[in-house]
Image (cartoon, rainbow, N blue to C red; front, top):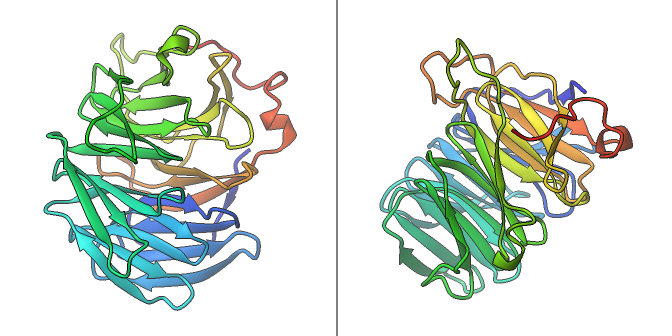
Length: 329
């Protein structure tokens, strides 16, 4: 499963890839200051919106509207049909992540200003609500009204209807959190860290013993020492419960089963680090961004590329996957 490489030129690091809520349109944000929309069904680049700032992230509001966060600390809204964009608001410091909730019509951002900010888009001018949490936000994940926030070595879970206090469910990692992903049903969470550890946590504390554990994506040691490889992203397949993929800084994307605690499939190593991952709404396609992230001085700097993998039955049949059936370490 080497995947099909999208034939588009991206001139700097890819910060985020995101599939649309319903269609197979793929949104791409990059440090080359362009927001791109690629139509997977027609294999054509539908739009390329030039900006004057590097883009640190993006997400869809709906099929025709998207958000981006830039190096100028601004949150922007984009009409993907016309290419017209407007500034929704700005942070006091860099925003590192953005999500949109269909349930509450809120764009949610987090960043180095140590705040979680919600932008209510139901009004003509976005209504802003900001909560100071005292720690820089590294990653967020949103499912329904549940928001997982990775800060430092901790992950807190919030209810969007009350951002003042996190829910009781929270847990810590030994090293800094690098990415976080909620289960499609919001009942669990997977967290990646800069040292290559992934924690799977059940949000219902009464079921915590059934699904709460940690494992290392790269269990082998190098020269007798533990080799720390950052996990850059984690995403769950929306149609196969508990199946999720991690992408790391050495260019590996690996599929795991949260229930059986086993590695299901290891994709062919990519030319660069895996900077971002995204499933389409049906779970049929997985987009993998292979791009340098400038996390390490010796990181490979091959041209950024995006690969699309089709999740056929052979790959997704958890009981018969032949490649990689070792248990978590």
